[in-house]
Length: 392
Image (cartoon, rainbow, N blue to C red; front, top):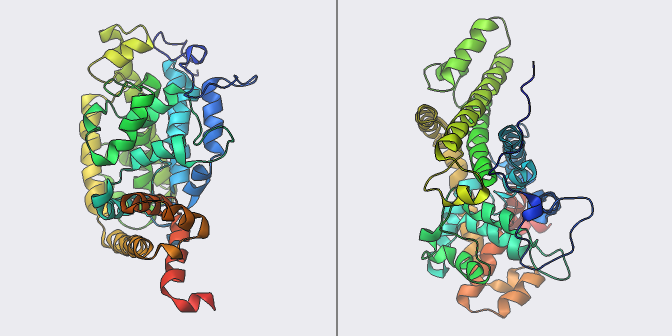
């Protein structure tokens, strides 16, 4: 018998009570404010570019592995399911999930590490801040404003879905957030909505599961090696026992599917326990708690930590992945230094803007240009800049 859908939770966000947008707009006749935010994100240029941005494997390494786009879609699916089961606003949870990686540069965390290094003297780089800048400034689609003019609740979720961030405002890389908050208070010292917290947990569920899947598929480790790894091991064993003659590739998917289910069930149970224990009865109650209301249980968090340790050792620092990381960092470093030293090789639109800026401003513009690239475009742009034969 199917599990009944939960009634609306007392602490769910109400789109009809949204705090609105920084620049007021007439409401949509057909969509709630949060659904409208979701649609704006899906139509954004930065969202389309996620299709060829690295999750773990660079785009040219194979088309079966996750990209930032497929990862974001998986996060959004899990977030929507969790929010629905908890009686929260599914549109808001899905919207924040779809937006959460818009600021990632090409080549995943290797790209972020290199941009952090190159931008040290110019205010730093943080992909969460870059995501916020994308949706509030860098996307240019509307005649009346830069950015997407998203609702207060979506902006809050984008920048603090992992918790309060007021302690980060002194970091140079967070100056853009401090400046925006001074004009439009996002209550950066409080927790975000339960829907934003759902998006954060959905991100954890998605990437740990699909990294197991991609890691086995890429041959970085075998399915049998996961048997002793907490969290995934019992599901591999159970699936193997139930389907002893099954193709290993199907067993892998079955084990991952079961692990997703177990993690979702754990979040639902722990969140229900916390909501009852704290007596939260409104979205404001969620924000003023001193801890998250949407969370894994302690046992699940410990098992997840052990799984992440395994993935760090066997996947994220595998020599094949390290080799790609090294190449990626050199590509971005060489382009950054060239654009800073010779801005006239930038595309005309970017060069015109660079001429009007001081050194720090030019560095931020160069950083924005590079951060917006897909893996494939970065590789091709680097070849055109450093290899004359490409123009033949």
